[in-house]
Length: 306
Ligand code: GLU
Image (tube, rainbow, N blue to C red; front, side):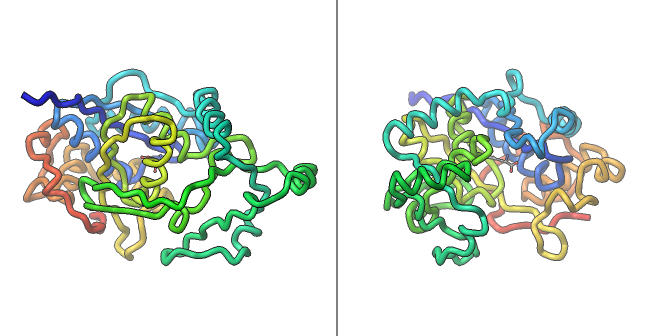
């Protein structure tokens, strides 16, 4: 009989505020995907940005997950405590000549005649890659650089469990991206790849706003010799006016929702929206386990219930 690798899913919230309905939706689906296969679930607090993330928000995130009925294995991992691990991955890439300093300010990047993608994202034009060592030296007298990784002209393709086949050309669709910010903070793309590997994550279920980060992450995994997890990008929850839910949508943050719904009521509404149950009846995450299947999940974004 074929031996299946044990599944390990993860929660990776950014503790920069109270979770909103969209965060809960991704967390619930990630938990169901892993636990319904008898898998493990780990928690990583993505608190790399010291200006936005606090211990109080980390504690709140954990209380909120527990309130909803979502549990995890092992101690939570805090990204802010793992700088040495990110530095060692960064150094590996640097030693292979893949990393260069970028002195561009945000204004310069936006003003550059860089190609824009159809969704408005500006692709870095690689200008600092072409600086001479003398130019670098001059710039470094007045500016602290960010550090970018040089991506090849290579198409990365994968099959998402929910969205289906997806591919991007790294040079054309992403451009050289930042591994370390000018204030020394390691960037999301690097940290997430290092941590998913270090934590043994085999299954990443997250919002579809991160679908287009995945080719970069798959490529970094390859470069660093890490295995590839499988990916499932869940559709986003939208506000009634069609915008994506954000932390500023106060009426959809958990503090407010808790005054309107019990945890099983909220879980039932989310599960109904995800196509897992026919009516939005109160239910616990554990009771939902037999109902979960990838095929039921919608591909399209959904409007959040009021
Ligand atoms: N921390 C990210 C967020 O809350 C999620 C990152 C990920 O799942 O890779 O949006």
